[in-house]
Length: 246
Ligand SMILES: C[S@@+](CC[C@H](N)C(=O)[O-])C[C@H]1O[C@@H](n2cnc3c(N)ncnc32)[C@H](O)[C@@H]1O
Image (cartoon, rainbow, N blue to C red):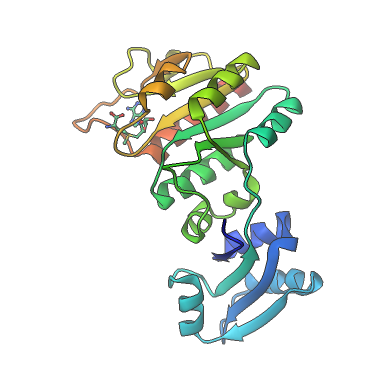
């Protein structure tokens, strides 16, 4: 199990300072970078007793293993891994669950974008299988723009079993697949809900698909057969948001 991680980028570090400042061990800022957005972050970090150093671009590039750090990199204690037990706690205190299931998303950019969509849509948690899925990496945090620190990610050992457990708790599970006969816009997305998305290449696995209450498709007008999973996630989540607000 990882003990430490690197988080970089203004939004990701800002979210860390807001949600779990106790995780930050030290921070590096780009020497000579005068960005007003960094000033409140430096102030908050110092208030929490975080050591803040200024360093050359090359040092930050190496720490982040990327040049996309926007002049700020933090070394942090790895986030606690959440599993079925914590999911149970969440369900216990949530009146109308609104969850996202990602069945085997492996591209960190896609997971980051899904987290960002989920945060914006008010999703209370994302459930992923422990194996064959990307977890929270530095790239995921950067792409998620702070949502990796605000949306809980539950990594479960047996996704189909967890889906059946959700159903026992009254959660309706809508799976998504391009070939489904029912269109997303015909589905009722108002009650306790989990929307299940498939992996980049293979879509939903057979057992996950069978564990869904129903399958829906997003109508496609053109020649391509499917959307990118993070785009499809955004479409589905915001249709649910529209219905839940009506
Ligand atoms: C790139 S697609 C996977 C394509 C895969 N070849 C398949 O047959 O499912 C990744 C995921 O995005 C979602 N998705 C993409 N396009 C969709 C559509 N038109 N309708 C419903 N879901 C879609 C589904 O969850 C799908 O599993």
